[in-house]
Image 1 (spheres, rainbow, N blue to C red):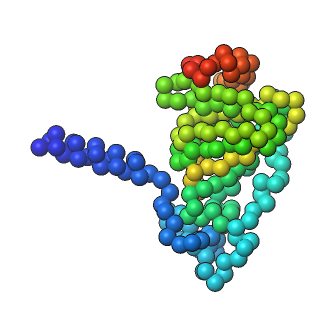
Image 2: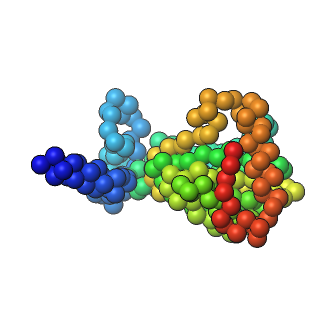
Image 3: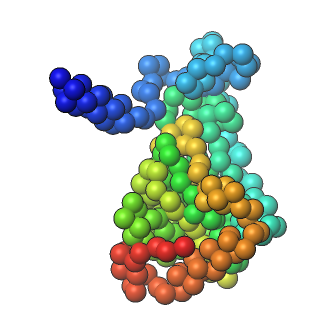
Length: 219
């Protein structure tokens, strides 16, 4: 009897995990209603259909270059349904990452989304780390696309000699972000973070051919 209950419990958890994605849209469109601040639901309420306009489906936020005047020499602007009304219930969010020369994005993960990256400018090294500590890394040039599976640690490095820009589409309207620096309770400018950045840059110089998609990642 105990074995049967344990099996049913494990099976139920498995089913819940398999279904852990943004819910399907029940309407053609459902732009976010930003006026209803006191309603707490899994997502955002829809605007009155009579008040929906074409402007709900356009955003110019990603047209602006981010501020890279910081220790990591990088900037990421994430646009979700909270900022872009037309994304509500579509299971999507978008982002722009600007990387100055020698700039990088520290390893982080999106627990609720896979990420598709498109290089709009420059040369960028992109990699992710799977649950077996294997690194899958490649060098991307303008027009190249790279996929990061949901929940896996990933990072970006500018390996060129000019500002690089990467645009991303994520498979959730609220992808979330887990950062290594935050998880370690260490400031970005701390020694552990400096060491990690040096190792990532050192690894990038090995070249994609030497890594062969199976190099173990060791912090």
